[in-house]
Structure formats: structure tokens, C-alpha cells
Length: 144
Image 1 (tube, rainbow, N blue to C red):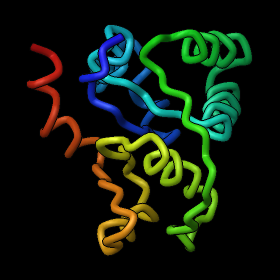
Image 2 (cartoon, rainbow, N blue to C red):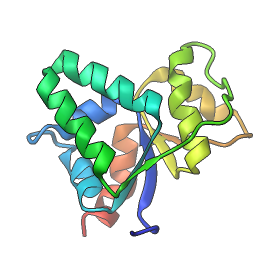
Image 3 (cartoon, one colour):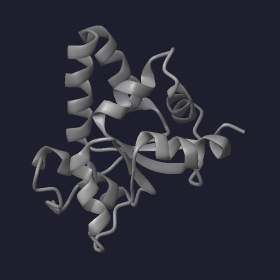
Image 4 (cartoon, rainbow, N blue to C red):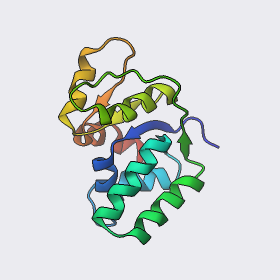
């Protein structure tokens, strides 16, 4: 197992945006498939991925994607032992922050404005990148 792969947490809207075969950001999902990226998730995140995927596609696709994530050697399941509650505006977003902290992820990828508060918090430090920023910083390195 490659422990040098980039460890990241991806919020649900970004995850939905990267899995489509015709998505301009599909390269991120492909990097997850081939092990250049390690996706960090918690049970709560998997449940949300499944719920939103089922709503936006159908049950079968949602089940297939979650099954893939469950068996992929490049998906790290984080156990959350402490809830930091760093995002007050939308407390549901905290599951991604807590996962990033617990998994010691390099960054959390989200375009959600509620995550901006993380840039002002020194401890625990969670690096937040918008999808475009993530692409600018990592696409060339990860797709060589």
C-alpha cells in the first residue's frame, strides 16, 4: 500500500463533481482509483455520499460507488474520537473537518463558503482548498 499518496478529504458536492466520466475534474477520481490519492472518509461521510448520490443519480449507482469506496485500498476509514465543532454556521460540515484532523489529511477540498472559517483557526490546523485551487496545485504532480 502506498503511504506516500496524497491524503485528502473531499466534501460531498466536490465528490459528486469528480466522479462523472465526462467531468473536467474526473482526473481526481482517477487518481483515487490508481492510488495517487488516498481519500479519507468516516462513516458519516460515506452515509452522506450515499444519500446525495442516490438523490442525484439512483440507488444502484449510489450502492456501487459506496461499495467501491468500501473495498478500495486507497480509501482510509478515519475513526472520529473528538468533535472539534469548528464550523458554527453549518454544523453538518464538521464531519469533514473532524475527518481531516483525525486522518491527518493534507487538505480538505470544498467550495462551500462555510469552510472559509478554517483559514482563521490556528489549532487544529485544517488546510482548505477550493476545487480549482486543488487542481492548480496538484493536477500536474498527480497526473504525470
